[in-house]
Length: 168
Image (cartoon, rainbow, N blue to C red; front, top):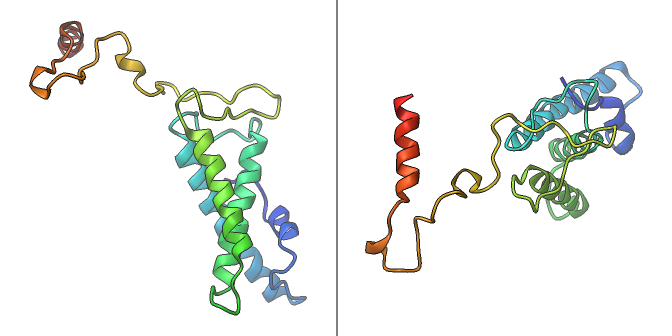
């Protein structure tokens, strides 16, 4: 499964060693395809904190497609070219850094994180049971106060609720 195709990545990287022979073409496609899978797994793993992943083929958010292409480009370039003084491509590393920053912001479960939108402009489906920050403890008094640590205590209502959950 993938959110993108090898052809879309190949058009983004015209400098890849795509030869006119069938063997050269097959090798390049194989490399890009394997990195699409790697990018797909990275995106799903990161976004699973907040969203119901993987997304279905009918509801793939366009940002997932773009990010998968970005990561596949980075991984493909990194695997085909060495990184030394003569062949140093900082632009591809910066490209990766921007993509990972965007992915981190999308996967941030707090209210400050970016919202992932589907192709219809609606928010992507949230993961069932996903919580934001300390949402599960907002109804209780904080455990860690500004007092001395010997004065810290767990809210008795919270302890009662925990005991009730264990008994049920």
